[in-house]
Every structure is written in structure tokens, then in C-alpha cells.
Length: 401
Image (cartoon, rainbow, N blue to C red; front, side, top):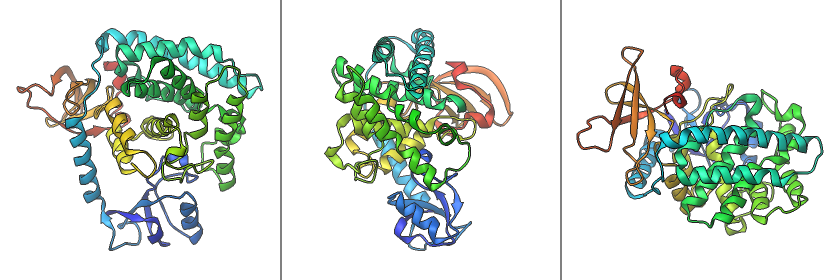
């Protein structure tokens, strides 16, 4: 049985099922492992976590802890309540009209960020003017239809992760800002901050940054210095905005003060820093990588709700859920009839019933003739049962957008 437990109640012999934190924010190779020594517990306490999940079938029990089924049911109900009440901004054009242009913008953005970060690793000055045309192109795509460009950003190549993650964070921040009604000029400054939020990683030794296995405690400590390194680099960049600097300097701070590097708390963290922390967490967990499977978006949204007012400000979490939707475009879902379907469009007034394209049948274990369903229509008797992991079925959802 999976149970949620206070970290103060951890004991040697318990089996950690989930550290309840993004895998990039802890030094353990996996989120799941047996607590074999007091040092393992000390390392978890050093992360300043509040709660973790244990598997009582693989390790010691904690009789007073809440079963995960109960926690999951509560989070599911909260998320669906939000899905019934939150409304998204209507797109200006359809997914089909925007997706081709969005692919071009993403390709250009990846090249630009790669070049800037590589120049930084070589000790060159950040050329801020290179970012502005790309940020403008991303912003225009977001304003036309935010789901098109965001849907293209989940798959990351292991050797390109830092660059591709940077583009995704910048793009999601732009979409987040638009959903909050922030002025266009500030939206683009936030986009620049998102694209450059991990620039400090270029000062982390390559053998640590690209290490495929478990980081040691000392290596993890070095990795965490990227935030301060990024702040210093951007402060020395001519024409940089305080908004952009705050995003790089604060994207690992937590609302309850448990983050790093400065342990800022509440409103000590700028609004853009708080937004960047949410976006960075979401993209890191939902990204598919060769050696790290993605977590499906709805599960990550539940984790954001769970971390609200601890790691994240709850009003901003709600606004972010409104930004990306309950069933983001490009995700794979299972329907009641055992078909797998790709979410191809979200309704701005009904976040629980998107448009989907059925492409594969689980019973037959074979691809089928694609069929479109609008789950919001009264005559449609299909509903979403759960998310599915595309890699499990060897399906590329982007091919069906």
C-alpha cells in the first residue's frame, strides 16, 4: 500500500515510493528506494521536504499515515472542481492553422538558446539582442494559439535537455503571463528570463551537468550553484531587465522558505520568480527524456496543488492550471472503449472535455483508423479514463497534431 508520511516519521527500512519533489531537485538517482541507513534519512531531511510517499509492501509500515488512494481521491476532486470553474482565454486561430508556424519558431528558439549558452560556457558575454526576435515570435504564437507551441515542447533529447528545457520554460512563462493579463512588454521580459533561467549551468563542470548516473552530495551541491552563477551572469549583461534576473535568481525558491539559494519566503520572492518555480517544476516532470520517463500532466498538476502554499503560492497554481488546462494538447489518454487518443484541442470554457483523436485500440493492440471525438458534445458517450505514457505504446502524439 502507498501511504503519505511526514518526513519526521521516516525510519530505516521504509521504502520511499516518491520523494514528492522534482527529480532535478534532489541528489538521489531515483524517486524510489529503500532507506538503508540513518544517513539516507538525514539526506531527505536536508532537502527540507514536508511529506513523502512510502510503499508498505516493500518496506516498513507507518500505521497512522494516510493511504495514497485517499490522498489521490482528494487531489482528483480538487483538480476536477477547478476544471469545472476555471475558464481559459479563447485562441485567435485553430491548432491546425498555428502548428506549422509553431514548429518553425521552436526550431529557431532551440538553435538560438543553444548558441547563447554555448557562448556563455566559452566565457563570452551574453548577447541579449539575439533573444528579442525569438521571444517576440514565441509571444505572437502564444497569442494566436498557446496550445500549438506548448504541445511541441515536451520531448527532450538527453544531450540537448538544458537548451530545450530553457525554451520550454520561456514559452510556458509567456503563456502564463498572457493568462494573467500582464502587459505585452513585461511578458517578453519574462520570456527572456525563462529562456536564460538556467544560464548558470554553463558554469557547472560538464561532467556533473551531463552525468547520467547518481550525483554525489558534493556534486549536487555544485549543481545547485547554477542559480547564483546565473544571477551574476545576467547582472553583468547590458540591457537586462530586473524581471529577467529575478526569474534566473529565484526559480528554485519555495513559498515556504525551503528553497535555494537564499531560502526566500512568501512575498520575498518576486511574482515572476514564483511563476518561474511553478513552470520549471511542471516542465521538468512532464518532459520525456531517454533515461527519465515523463510524468503525465494531470499527475504533475495534482503535485502542484499538493505543494500549494508550501512550495508554491496557491492562487498562482490555480492560474497556471488555467493556463495549460487539465488535458494539455498533445497528451495521450485512454477512453472508456479502450481506445488510446491524442488530445488535439481544448475548449476554453470546458477544461474537462477536450477534443481527441482516437488512434489505437488496447484490446486489439493495434493502430486503428483515426476517429475524432468532441467529448463536450451531449451525443458523445466517450470519456477519458486516464492518461497513458506514449513511450509505453511507442506512440508519438505530436505526429497526430
